Length: 456
Image 1: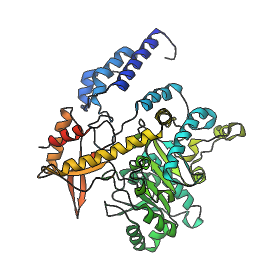
Image 2: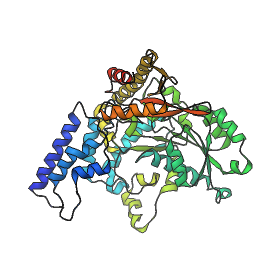
Image 3: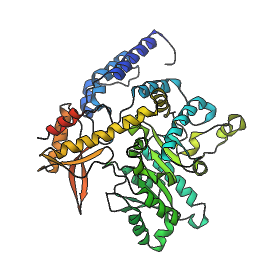
Image 4: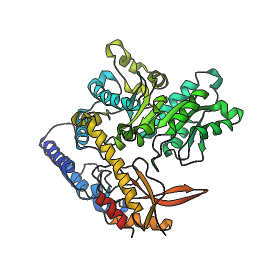
């Protein structure tokens, strides 16, 4: 398996040809999933005692399996939070894999970690955090949020008063699902402020004032959102920071989706207060045009993260010897083994420059405003709320929940678009509505119009 022969060389050329075609193509099929049974019928047994051969397996991928995926960079894939990695980033993802770099410790991955840190320095500069703040790349927002909250919890438990207490954090119902997920893993309780709109400092103040004595004793952190996944809402970061500073609480900002907008001059002021946070999550694989998987966690005081996450073992001692001194990413997040997932982002930034990034993010904001205007002018649809960042919530007048579901599946079946419904809280009830999330600067006004027309 590890020998070089003519078959390997030919297979490498085939793979590179495929990659070149994918990177240089101006149009892609949107693709759609198939049932397991249908895929099995198409490709048969692929993992066998003797193997089926590289050429045969690759043809199965090209002819059948690749078409059962929905490319996140399709210009009419506006569901969830899509992605649009630059071609430069995709190219360097190939280099990253081919280079076989272990990105945990400087001793093994100094060159790759250096590149990651160059990209991280730019991201940190966008936040306005004070000198000394820094971060590391993670697998995504869940790992970043978990790393931050574990750091907060361990710092809180330095006080013996809290050694045996189960921690409590406060966030809003608009927070991303990963906040609840990581709270389970970190074994902390979570209290949700019942508002899907902007979480304010006053909301937080009222929630804390209504805690009983033991709840207040267990409260150690607050998670605000810098651009909710559902609607692009940015919490009152200044007001929340005021409360956290007064109450001596860890202030974490989950800006996994919205953090890319820190690069956009037109909306940067909406994030004022983020520079007062203790930790921040940003996903470059969302609005910083990096391939999956590439999240990031940033700390105001990285030494607190190092105290929480640095792993010990006799086999690891060499990495911390004077002869191996350098930045060790594994010390600042939950993973030991890691790839240098920030490397494609670095290459793209080095290739294009940060000004081009600003322009691409601004385009997503512009598309959301264009869509809002088109919806306002269309008698069949109406805005649920004004567009926020690159998210647009709107309803088709007269539709029931099943109409949205059927419409989504029909457009997807045709290979036309993927736009999915969501729910928005109106009073005490949740209403099913439709949602756009614009990331890809290649999405056009015509794309938006065609999608809206398909609702007629």
